[in-house]
Image (tube, rainbow, N blue to C red; front, side):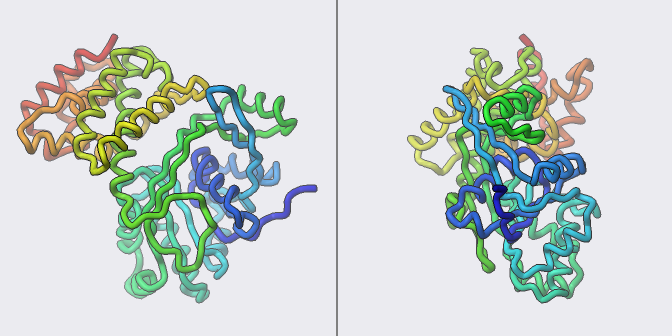
Length: 398
């Protein structure tokens, strides 16, 4: 018998592979999962919505352990819609039983333009106010520091004065930190699911065993009983993840591609790159508030994740959207080091690798000023830093 459709009480904006390996998975495995269905809206393409609807919104999560894969059928999606289905979006947000909106639109989706997530949320919140539907929590799940405050500022900047007051009284902006490596699904993955489960799944998701979700904020209308970490301050967890995991990913992506590698596992097996990652980690770790022993354990866990032979995490995928990613991942440490009079090799090398990547076939000297100014105008006149970026860029290619 097919599983009963769960009542929609969560709406998700930006459905993709990551949200299905993370938020949807956490909701599916919650003890009260039967009470919490998700209505999900895709980010750009309608294709995923059509594919999932054709298979009852269920899909397979393939967890790639070093010893072999496991397969879970995820049933937390009760409805899936294309991004353009605005009437459905407004209808869900106006329902009093909808308590939570989770959001994965990548760092670039938080701009205040008419096509950004904040504008869609403002429209939905206006519909909710008009319906008298009561309080709701918004949970951004993208790699932005203090993402709850970022979303709050963007939403309030677009709301009219009357709606602003209602939002202040009825909307909780929850800050969250998420972590689970989710590589792009391949035809081989789809064939593996069919062979192992008998389910001809056209939208499976592949992920790693590790997952983390840390949240800080209120849920005045309730939430699923997620097996997540709830804290007063997400910032220490955020910085550790952004700097050590995401920062290392940026280094491996830009330097790894330049050295002829395709995946994280290949790149971290390169002893030169492994040394550069450790160098960056040494620099960044000095500015983390966690106990040094906890940081060392976290670094060891990252190496296990990076070296998992079953996870094919493409460097080209990680390398996208550098201008949005570099500022949060690398620049805090670089700025702090420069303020103390040092040109740090670790963070400067990551910046140099990105400059080299952007330069392509052009000389680094021709693009370095423009590229640095794009992400760090305050550092664009730093001649000592510029010289070191150019020098390190020349050492990266194999």
